[in-house]
Amino acid sequence: MDWPVIQEHLPAFAHGIGVCLLLLGISVGTGFVLSIPLAIARVSRSPWLSRPVWLFSYVIRGTPLLVQLFLVYYGLAQFEAVRESILWPLLREAWFCAWLAFALNTTAYTTEIFAGALRATPAGEVEAARAYGLGGWRLYRRILLPSALRRALPQYSNEVVGMMHATAIVSTVTLVDVTRVARDLYANHLLPVEAFGMAAVIYFTLTFTLVGAFRLLERRLLRHLRPERAAAVARPAAA
Image (cartoon, rainbow, N blue to C red):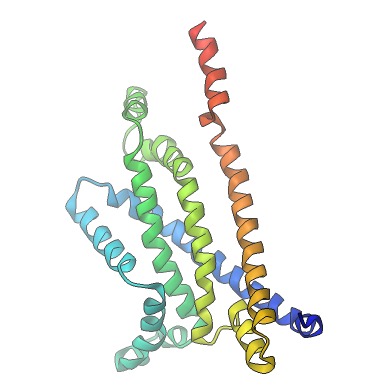
């Protein structure tokens, strides 16, 4: 291991980590906000609401993220109407295109995760809420959404970790992330173990941190579903 070369590139790797985390944060945040109303529409009985969301989700989940990124960054620029539109100053920027592609991708997956959690809501919870006079948006806001988001947390954590790994492709649209720094290190010094080994250590550390954070969140929000907690609640009721 050529430690001096690795030490020389540590500031560049630190910058790459910042790019990775910033893109992850804004993309996942956007996807989370958009996916909640889309998930509600997805489980709606009205085909005018559910079918468009299904089509969006089907198309996005049916194509690779790298292809979507290329279509946004390289493809839209081929249309003169796009280049002459007021959106062109944004669409010609790599950061905006990366955010747009990543946000749309995670929105599609997160929508299906939340929609599945909404469908899995026990009928007893809905009946109890309706017995208290809750309906419409109040039912979603107070009962369905909080319950569904808690149940969806394990799957959603996998989606966030997957998006973090996917940030490795943004170097294809000129953003300098961890993978781009590793590629430059390899190209300049021909040290594949040092270059990509360092990238692997960084991604593993980020993954370990994200998984640990979600585990703590699950332990806090889903503690009522743990067997020992459920047994403790059931004993007084039985008595």
